[in-house]
Image 1 (cartoon, rainbow, N blue to C red):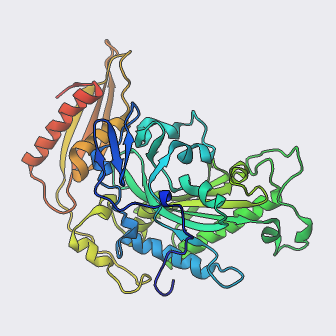
Image 2 (cartoon, helix red, strand yellow; image 1 turned 60 degrees about the vertical axis):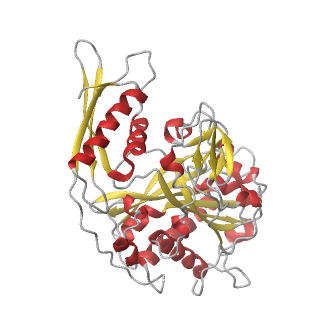
Image 3 (cartoon, rainbow, N blue to C red; image 1 turned 90 degrees about the vertical axis):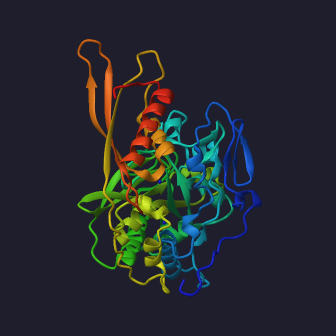
Length: 438
């Protein structure tokens, strides 16, 4: 955790293994998983589901006139026009067709994420096997692009995470990554007596909450200013009006210092991007030890929800013509006033169960959410925990969840929902080892 005439990809040729293959739908077998024309052997870590595999290759961010495509192109257009190199050509190159299948090393190790870091958990990611996964963030490609010689680039793509179920979370979403590197001369070129300043401290520098041990304070302050100015300019370009924004200090293993931008949406604060000064160790490993840089990653869905006032993240996958036709515009900068579709009535069903006894496999909420998605697909709008009860005598623990069923394109019947809900109850007992209280 970013054109004025026809918008064309400016990225240089990449190795064929890095580009998407155009193949039939991904398939999940008992011994292997086939994704984008290649088979991956299953093992004890394989947890990707058929419903998630069915989303691979949909490439919403590359479907012309889809709202995510529109937003991606508007971001590209802003960076192309606002930042030019010495020759007048765009400073940033753009890449949007890298395969979502990456190695665990790319997704975690290349970004300095420690082996014990919670973000690696099987319960939070989609693994094809112990060494290969569906990327959890576009940052998985950061090192390879920097190593290829790029100093400024944008990268868009689909990413995959096991997560809760509500209006702003979905197991497949899209990110846009931005990276910019600076040499000593480039960073201090507008500073008085900049030739006398240095990006790096002498040996023995100290890491603080505000800087890395190898960076000078002057360099970090300039990088932070440039980064926030760049992203604030992007937000002003997209919204063309006052948008309530706040910056929060945060932590990422691959940047320091790190920040999050939140925007006000429907009365609540919503995180839309994370950013920071790139860890120098990451740049060293990519072969650019003489440069410093910043990076950001933004969620296209969440930004599009704010920009177009789309209330439910599931709608981005809709085939409803009433939704899609609203984004068919001649100019990517044309203002769109999204007309919300009539909301179909929700149906509520609760599920209660005793958790497994001590000594048995532990219960994880993300496993339950994933099971619900696997059985019900997009029929479930939200899952919330209603009650967490511990029996005073036996010490057994019981959970009660409320499932809100609502289709984005039609009315659901009680009979249809009841059949799905009963299947969820059966699968929860069978797969998660709980004891139903129905």
